[in-house]
Each structure stands twice: as C-alpha cells, then as structure tokens.
Length: 76
Image (cartoon, rainbow, N blue to C red; front, side):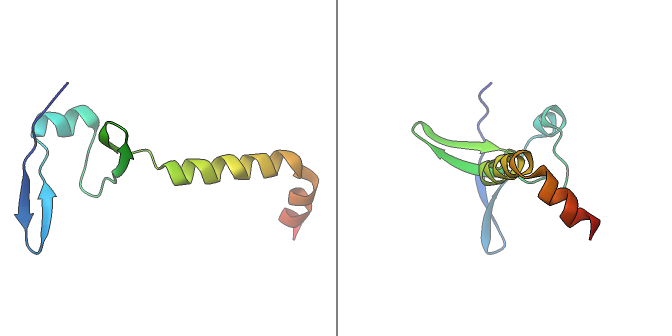
C-alpha cells in the first residue's frame, strides 16, 4: 500500500497526520511510538526499535551463558 502524507507545521515543529483508516489499520493511538530507520531505499517508519532488539538479544545470550550467577543475584 502506498499512501501520500503531507508534512505540516505544528507549532515550532513539523508533523505528519495519519488518516483515520491508517490509524485503525495499524493500531495507532495517541502516544504510539514510531522509529525512523534510514535504509538504502530511503526511510522506513516502524514501531520496531532496532537498538532495543539488539540489546534484548545480548541480554538473552548473557542469561543463557550465566544462569547460575543470575539466579544467585536474584536471591539477593
């Protein structure tokens, strides 16, 4: 799907307003967070945070590697 959105001035900033059908389709609500990712083809607007996903994967590896130490730390 391709949809044209217009950037408009909002106070001292610029913003994009999503049409109602897109809000419902993508489940947006006030306060939803989106991330702009630079790609070879331009930009991607996504709710997926690449930095958080990478940090989560690193923490999973640590938890798999050191389960006993983490269990001890959790006991206080």
